[in-house]
Image 1 (cartoon, helix red, strand yellow):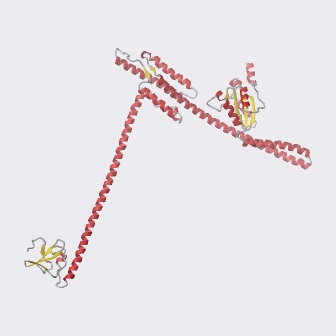
Image 2 (cartoon, rainbow, N blue to C red; image 1 turned 180 degrees about the vertical axis):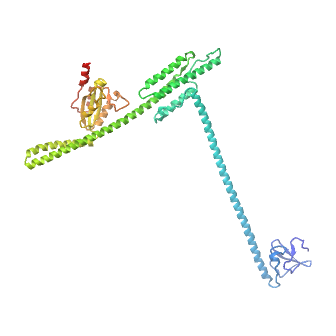
Image 3 (tube, rainbow, N blue to C red; image 1 turned 45 degrees about the vertical axis):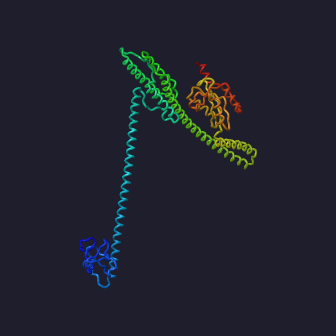
Length: 473
């Protein structure tokens, strides 16, 4: 057998010519002088580093005696080499796991990048849609402006109660303009013997007249006040009639539904202005009420200080009279001291009870004419101070008093009288202007219905200054 045969190599122990290599270990098959035999001394596979006998294992010499022990050492080395092989395999598996994890991370990052790109794409598409809507809105706005419809600042836009209603009215106005139902004109009009030119002439005239009408409507809205709604509506109606008169040749007119919507828009502006005025009047009235309250508090404090000082004088005088033995004089001062104590108690009651006060019914024929009364209340210690204050230089004549009486709950009594004559108020915007179109007799009857005991009530006003002025005239 030659060495060229597969698996047979020179015996590394030098005891035989050749030994068989199984690919992982030397077997007990040997070849000597052309015959195969089993060496009785070799019972365990011989482990070497390489099949060619080179390296560390090829240089070793196996002793004749003790071959079994040497074979055991070789087996141990073989096991160590197998462990290294296995360990090397685990390292490869670990490398494969690390590679797999890295690839998975790359996939995750790629998916995240894809999601980010998709989100960015959605944002771009959303911006594109918004831009398209803006373009459409701009085109619609430009189309409205051709007819004089502008998005100007309407007074009622800031109103919580009127903003929604205003938005609805404006939307309907734009719909009528867009659908060409804001104006009405003849059809089949000929211009230079051309129906097409006639149709264009009618369209241009309709647009021109509608622009003029809408400009007048916008001016009316911007200039309307709380008290001039009627005049503003008449002004806008006059503009509509003017359009109809100038467009008579082609039967041009502003349609009734469109004119009604513009009047509604004008009404909303006036209502908002009225609400603002009422709010301002309420604030002004509140400030006036606070000023009046401070005056009353100062007046009550001054009155109490005066009464306290007066009581101190009485007490000192009584003590002096008692010391002198003048019991009769001391008794008279005690009566005055009791009156002073009662006055102090009244002042304390007025200061503690904010609802107590004087209800007054007054009139001013020279300023407001007959059958007009003012119903109010005051907490002043001297109620005539308030009446005289009302009749200062702001009115031509002084007020005449029909009734002036104290009530523990003057606030409720005054409120009930105001409700009784609410439909006869002269000023329905500023409720602090407490003037009513009623006769003194009607007010007296209302007080009787409230079971109020009025000790004195004058039906006919004296109006001395006014009547003397009439005689002089």
